[in-house]
Length: 194
Image 1 (cartoon, rainbow, N blue to C red):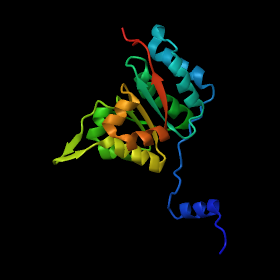
Image 2: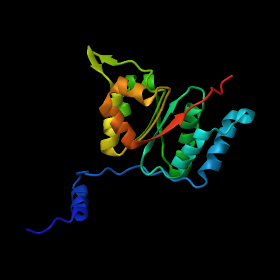
Image 3: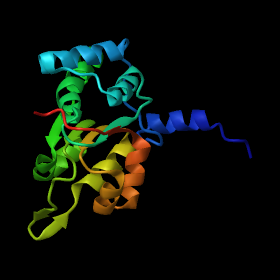
Image 4: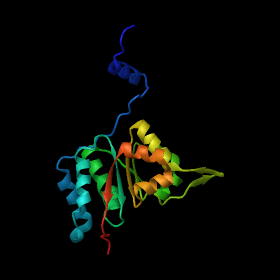
């Protein structure tokens, strides 16, 4: 019996529609730190500040290695500003990608639509309630993580919860997947809101 050529066999099966390895979304923006800073200055005007955690966002923008992003931690540090306002503009300008943006509450209202998105931002994860339709209880976020891992979707998440709080809410399996498909960035310190 002849030895298998895995690369050749995978290519053959993909041509037939069987996806063993999903195609990941690649983000590479040159001079990302400077461009991110310009976005922060645009939205914050004279109040703009460069925080240490922004360095990690700039590194992710330089090369995401096919992974999404989860920004978690203290409120008022710019997570939603960067993820829901600046990143959609940068991804569209540099890669012609359109990010579907859902507030966590909207995610439940449009569950199946959110799960189908190839590029998805969920803002303020952990604030949503369990979805109940016709008496059926459904927790949407684990389904989104599962689909993102299996189909190579780009998932960006903001939350004020810690990883342990997310684990308690969604379970070990979901958080294990989330850690595998996203780069975590911890936001710490005092709120910048006045």
